[in-house]
Length: 407
Image (cartoon, rainbow, N blue to C red; front, side, top):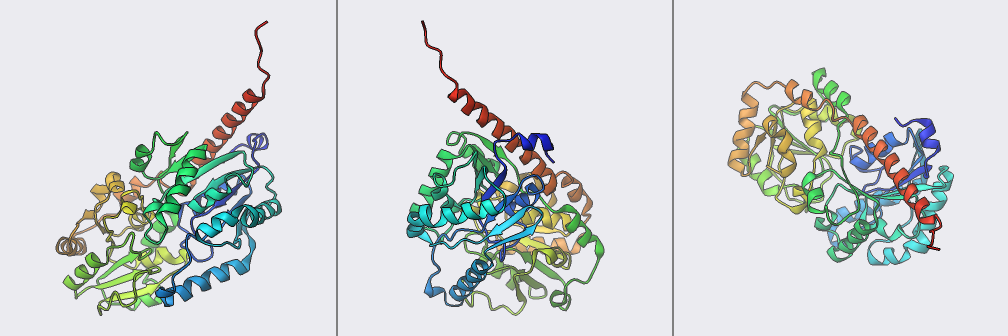
C-alpha cells in the first residue's frame, strides 16, 4: 500500500485508534474497523475499544443487563492480536464527566502500555469516540487525526454539554479531520486545520458473491415466507423510524418484515405478527442475510444524525443486488437513481410493492460501486497520512531552526 522506505522514514511507527465501537460486539462493517484492519498491513495498529459515553440506566431493565454484560466480556479479553499487526484493546474506563477527569492517570497509562506491547513508540493518534479528547495531551503523538463520521452530539443518550466540549477540543487540536459526509465537511470547513473526505466503502467481493449465490440463506430466515422485506442494522432511536416502519408493516400484512441487528428501542415497541426480529448477527454472515431478502429497506428518521451520515449499508445493499427502498437523506445524492425513496407509510409500502413486482437489474449499481471498496479507500487514506506526517515534521523542523538576526 505504502512503500517500505517511505514507512521507515516516517515520524510515526504505528497508529493508536480510539474507536467509536467495540470490536467484540459491534458490527465490524464500521468505518474505523474496516480502515484500521487494512492500515495494519503497513503499520501496527492498536484499536482501543469504545470508551463509555455514559453509564446505562437501570430504567432500561434488560438492556442495562445486556450492555453491562457485553462490556464486562470485552474487558475480560484485555489486549488481543486479532490478525497481522492489528491489536484490539479493552481498557478499564469510567463513563461521563468522572471518566474524563480520570483519563490522565488511569486511562492513558493503560493505552501507552498496550501500544508499547504492540511495538508502537511514536504513534499517530486517531480519535473517533469524542471521549478520546481527554487523551490529546496525555498520549504524545506525531499527528492527531479526528474521525468525524458521526454527529455524536446528536446521540440522544449522550450528555450534549460534555460531548459538545469534547468535539470542540478535538476539532481545535486535530491536525486532520476525516469526514464521510460532504455536507458536514463543508459546514465545518472554517473550524479545523485540514479536512479529508472519505465516504464509506464496501466489501464488494463478499456482498456481490452472496447476491449471486442464490442460496436460501441462513436457517432462521430461509424458513420465513415470502416476500421478505429486510432491514439490517442498529434499531436505534437516533436513526431508525419506528412509526414509519410499523405503519408500513401494517399496510403489508402479506409480507414478512425481517429486522436483523441490535435494538435499543423500548421493550414491546413492536408486536406485529409479520415482523420477525432476529437480533445481532456476525458480520461474516450479514451478506447472506441481505441476499435472502426480496427487498431491503432503510426507514430512517429525520434526525441530525441521519442528515450527517453516510450509511455503509446503502452500498452493501446495492452490492448484494436487491432493490432498495429508503427515506430520503443528503448522502443519497450519488445513488438516488438506483433506489426508491418515500417518506410516509403509504408511499413507502407502495414503493416496496413496486420493487417486488418490477424487474430489477443489479449490475448498474454494482458498476457504480466498482471504486468504492475499502481497499481503495484505505490506500487513499494511507497516502494522505504519509503526506500529513511529512508536512508536520517539516513544520516542526522549521520551528526548531535557529532564526537569523539582523547584524
